[in-house]
Amino acid sequence: RQLAAARQRGMLAGLALNPASPLALAEEVLTDLDLLLLMTVNPGFGGQTYLPASNDKIRRARELLSAHGSRAFLEVDGGITPHTIAAAHAAGADTFVAGNAVFASPDPGREVRELKRRCLVTV
Image 1: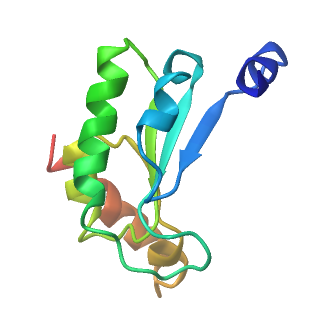
Image 2 (image 1 turned 60 degrees about the horizontal axis):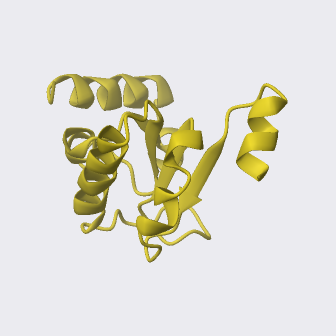
């Protein structure tokens, strides 16, 4: 109901899943989603390391969204760096939160350009 209420008010509707949350929790509402956010670290504080098992979950989420004809964004948040973004993108993520990688960098603009470049080389 909350997703429908958000959409009726002209907002985008999204669902976030923690690393331990199964994708099955999203299955009933996939057609109502504009965004599916997969946390790739355990939420709580910045600077954590990307969980390697996230790539498989991203891949399965992309397959699930495609199977349901969903055009929802598949966003990932946590541990996104130039070293992890390409694998997350290749697995199916199309939207990225890279807070610590950008804001802890001495040159945030250069870091954003590098993150974008890493995605482009996986296309």
